[in-house]
Length: 452
Image (cartoon, rainbow, N blue to C red; front, side, top):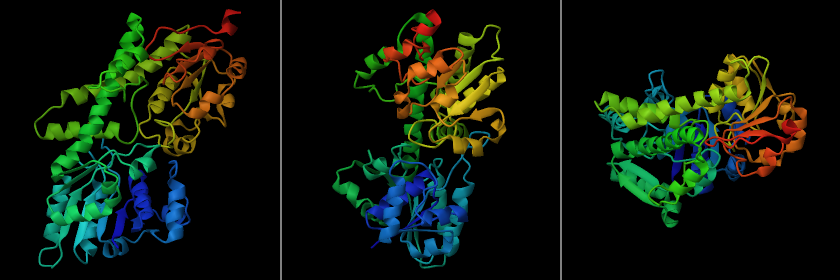
């Protein structure tokens, strides 16, 4: 039986470890946060991800999944070690590899036999090769070998467990046959499922991850720029996206106009690949343009709100209800969420801001201390909308479909609804009660209440 070690218990490491334990591998996950590890050993997930907590508790009950803060224990008891720590963006856009190298140094310090070391974190091109060189130097004069591989994750937050159980593809970069064979053993279930596998070298594997996320970010920024133009010329962005998506060379995926992309991957990965390009003498103009367009989109959404409900060029005296803080539904992740920039923009215009999110408020209170006392956290949608001049839907949580529009409208001072996700673009009922503003269309509509 293969013993698996996972260094890091964030979104990637935790899901990966839990899924591998469900396949019967003995998995030990390591993190430096003692309180977090204590809670994990009790079966409590520190993040909201559908199906994850049940998977954790199942692995703990079966004895295939344990958690520790002891790096030496994990390194020495594992045959394969996955590095799954964060690689956040620095101020200049480059990836911060501090946590990666802390883990690599611990591996080099405690290694007690031949190991396969797998880069699961998103790392700049060349990092796995540098890890290979570092460990090779550390092990000179010993009988041990460290076989390094790159195995990027392609998980969608909110669907991370299902994506890990049934991945769209598995990419493995390795020069070592030992590493390839170990990962074939680890992913035997996926091989049996006929999941597509790509075997390549370390640099290509690392590049695939950045290329994938950058392309998707470009696609989002492209449709968002067309949405802004559509509002000026009278076109409908949703029909444009549908027409484009009918072309199988384009596909309909990631053509949903909105307030801009966010999350833990697209913002930092686009910046990181631009930084890699710059350091290698190749400016990535298309990716740079996508980053700039994304920033413009968030600013445009603030202007859209201001232009619709302001009479004097400011939002002083106006109360805005924000529905949704997370960058997407079915996650509690607020990292780089467009809601943050839009809230800051509204506050800067003088508005009072109330917020409600099914899963993101605890994280916002913790990670956005600069907003403490400047925004009001609410217990539900109705409380958030009460006495507001406008609702701004930032995240398309499914539960928002169940609200009573009449109840919301009658509790507000003014009935304006900004649908930043076009979640209700096809719902005629909402136009009976609200002046409705989707993204990428001039068809605003007027509420019955205002018409009376």
